[in-house]
Length: 375
Image (cartoon, rainbow, N blue to C red):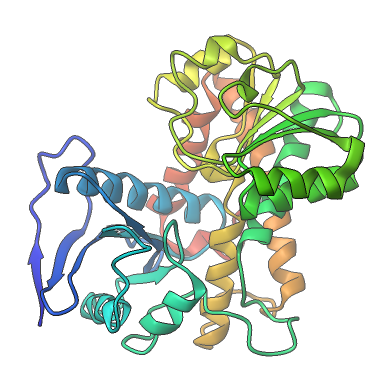
């Protein structure tokens, strides 16, 4: 039987006026999940369901609070009429998904009454979203079932396309023009997004250095991209003398140890929470590095699942049709959005992370009227 407990996290260091934080448990399936809704000024909160074997409950609470807040800022800056939320399920995703497990989580989402819409994240899959959808309609990221020309399906390639567009904005800011041909680019993490990003960059004529913990992925990349790609050690790739460093793996990789070692003039990638601490934003600026704030450059995924949810539920908030072409056009505006971030950062002599925060806060605090034309 599913039980819920509203958590009082008001004194938690990562609390930021979150609207609702709820713990769900189900003894029958073993479910232990936390859903956090940060802000719904612009609409229902949308954010993925992360499944991870947290060592302590407080670790899970910290993650869900930080991630849900990040989704508020990400959706606002991406021009989506959505708020920020997130869910975490405690456990190893390879061990805990017993029959009925994800449906039980779907029941938890349903109990949130539409304030939270779930989607894929680390540890969860399209198949999990199908199971969740048996218990609630508040789910996005369901697989494409038609011709393949719609807006549903795997969001990873869309995230990669957004990062690619964002790197062009970074190149314009750093080098005066957006051309990536001939640029030396290091990609840390060749998962679904990192690999797709490599494909975009290779097609543009970039020279790539790649790192990943899985050797088979690196071998596939070497076969596909031939002399255009070089394999680098995962622990050393941030130190390479390249034009662009693209973190596409775990967060907190930009910290006191790594920042002094970075030689790239640009940092922009798909990883979430790249800055270990907020003060590292200023460190990057002091070093002259053009940093694309993670939630600004990697918002292609949330745009993809947002469009899919609006399309599937027949709730079109825009003045254009919900097609793959209009979705990809929306994602391409990441380049323009980052241009605004860089301009604000230059004008105010602040870090780009702080500039992105200011722009996002202006949007979501103003309310929904700004969203159909934002980004």
